[in-house]
Length: 597
Ligand code: BDP
Image (cartoon, rainbow, N blue to C red):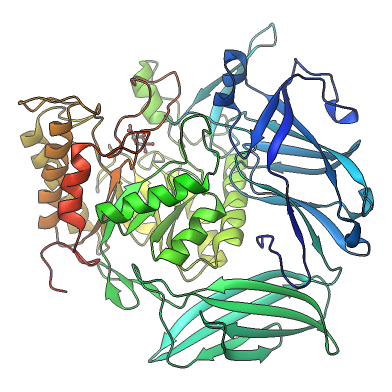
């Protein structure tokens, strides 16, 4: 789905700001039919949970309502008028005046509604949006929902991060010509010094199409006509990790000589390939340094914030990180665009976190339910996962920063049913995007012998906590376990091995002379131990520390005001480990430590 942009034929109005807000049960029934009966206002974009002092709002399970009035610009008569929600977490229902105009399930991908027939240029309408935060066995991410006899809804989670919800990303009103560009796909390639750009344009109705590639200075470097084709860019300027370069693809829909729609999609020319145990970007071995992140800040929750965006990327550059993973859901598109412009490499992850009842069963002492079964994660879950993959790839396919899809985090991959669940999803992802490698992270228990799905993927991504959850506080034993584990994978598979997560909770400012978990010294020693092992394993292609920053977690997990595995605190101050990582990562030049540049 194309990002709404202002172009010579399209206009865009941003609807962020303060909206009337209330939770179901405290506002009238069918709140879209009139003015929302509430004293509250909530900021958009931001999760609603932490904006108020009321626990009932923070912990609300079910629908909440947002409302504002919107005026359609008077010059839009004759144009199609659309609403676009960058995200409604996890389900959205949109009403224009009394009319339902859109419904969408999935909290981290965008959706739009053509409201032309419901509004008039120059006039106002009432925009009411319901957002539901419930997670069940058939949503992505999954959760468990129980409803008590008195109707109280209780939500439990299969992930540790707080279930921030609401309108955490921007809302737009935009105009589009009746005959328009619906979609653009750009697949770059390299042929010697020439860039090849396979493009495909989908239009709303049969029409002539012209495309022009412009370089960063705006000079035209290639042009073609037709909805599909290949552009050749001589002396191409590659998009490189740490040295971004973007072209623009200007796509025009023509009626004779008249341009009826124009849309500009930025793109980069780079290649990605897994060969043997190497991960190649532009034919060069690439070593990932960086983090698993979260969209998480005080007060805003998962709300997108440009100041944090800039600051987080500054901190990543400062620490020498060349990449990050969008753990555990697709991030705001602004984040990927920023990564495109600044040469930061991204592993783009779905919201499929928690397809794992083995972890929970073990911890609760109740015994594990089977993860994959008609009562638990079933065909309907798989269908929701497939739909999520379609929407993610439709949104992010043209970003040069995205070098790999991570289709799930820590599923129960050694359990019966895992292969049947994942094989069709892997196949679907390869059909949707034949160009990017695939991975899925492996949780701490399955090893090379017990895992049932690793062969389906191109890169083996391991989340390992030896020295934290296993061999806690005993880094010698942890080092031995880790090395044996990694060597097991390296012996079995001729594939790159990547550390998707490794980390230790650390309270900023807590120090000790001794090797004591939770101290800043322990976090450093823990990371050092991991790095010694990584550097001894040849097939190793990168390391993403868990986590970039401390983040808020759900109540039902043993945490001290959130997950403290951040290398930076929640307010982005460096822990000692940040300085240690900086010493290791700066100057690596995207190369594995110890190898020649
Ligand atoms: C991993 C999960 C991650 C958690 C982390 C932890 O992938 O989401 O935050 O453990 O426990 O299993 O810190």
